[in-house]
Image (cartoon, rainbow, N blue to C red; front, top):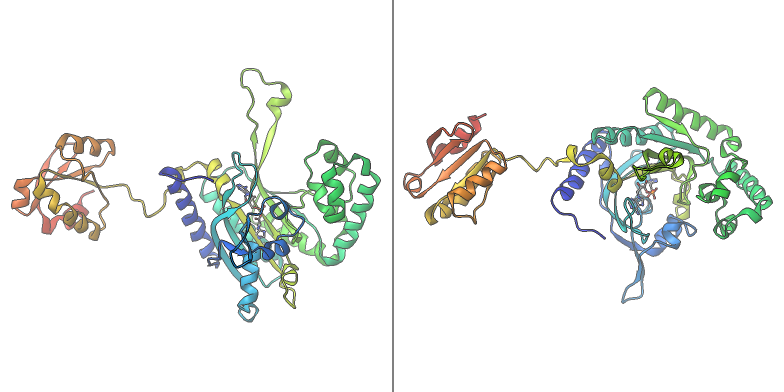
Length: 427
Ligand code: HAM
C-alpha cells in the first residue's frame, strides 16, 4: 500500500474535486460509507464466487467475534444504506456518489494496488434506460475534463432473470461439450458462475469463446428494448462505444447492461528490436466499469427488487493515464507574493502579515525559518513569484513593508494597513 506525497496527493485531490463537481451538477448526492463493514455484506453482495471475495477480501475477526472486512467496492454498502434508510419512500431514483480507498488483496503492480481508489456513482430505484445513459454520460464527461484521450465504452447486455436462465443453460451445455479444453478454474466456474468463463484470459478459452452462445441472442423482448435504447442514447450523445459480447464483468450482481471504459496502449516492447507481433501488441487498460444490478437488493434481504445502475472509475489508473497536469485542486493557488522577513522583529510580525494577506485572498509563500535575504530571494525566484514583500527592522518600526516587482526590481513602501488592498490591485 502506498504513501502519497506532493504532486501525487494533489493529483488525487484534484481528480476528486473535478469528478465531484461534475457528479453534483448531474444531481448526485455525496455520501460517506464505512471502510469496514460486516464481511457478509460483501460475500452476499459482491458474490461468493467473485475474485474480490474468494481471493482478495481483507477480512478480520474483532475481539467480540464479529467478522468484518475492509470494503473491496462501494456498491453493496450503497444498497445497504438505501435499504436501511427506507429510501424507496423518497423521490426515485436516488442518486448517490462517493469516493475513497478500497482494499483488494491482489498482486500489486502498476495499475493494480491493494489500496486502490474509486470514484463511484449509483442510481437506485429506477429501471429506466436513461439512467444507464446518465451514468455513462457522467463518466465520459469526467474522463474528458481530466484529459483522458481515446477511451471507448465496451458494452454488453447480460439479460434479466428470465433470459439469463436460458443463456446460462446454453453456456453450460456448450462448455460441458468442451470440458477437456477447460482450465481447472473454468471447470470450477462451470459449477459456480459459468458466465465468468467468457472472461477468461487463457488462449484456448479465448478461442472457445468464439463459438460460445451469445447473451444478446437470448435477450427477452424487454431486455432487448432496454439495450437498444441505451445504445441509442450513447449514439445521440456521441459517446464512443463498442458492443463487446464477451464482456461479463467480475461481480455476481449484474443484470442487463454491463460496460467497461477502456483505453488501448502500446505494450512496452524493446524499442530497438521488437518483433512484428510485439510491435502490434496493445494492452487493454480498464479505467472503469459498471452496470445494472436489479436483483442485488433481494440478495441483501430486501422484500422488493430495487432496480439500479452504477459505475466506478479506477482513479489510480486514470491518474497514471492522464498525468497530473490538469488536476491541480482548487485549494492550491499559485503564490502571487513571496514574503521575506529580516531580523527577529520582522519574524515576530510575519504571521500577522500573512493573515492580512489571507484575509485579502492573496496567495502568499514564505520561508519563515530562513534568515538571509539571499536565500529568501532565491526561493522567490525559483517559484517565479511576481512580487516580494520585504520586511526588515526599519519597516517594522514604520508599520510598513517594501513591495518589490521582481521583474523590474522597482520597489514601493506600503503601510501594512493598506497592504491587502494594494496587492489585490497589482496584476
Ligand atoms: P470493478 O470493475 O471491480 O467494479 O472496479 C472498477 C474499477 O476500479 C476498474 O475498472 C479499475 O479501473 C479499478 N480497479 C479495480 N481493481 C483495482 C486495483 N486492484 N487497483 C487499481 N484499480 C483497480 C466495481 O468495483 C463495481 N462496484 C462498479 C460498479 C458500481 N458497478 C455498479 N456500480
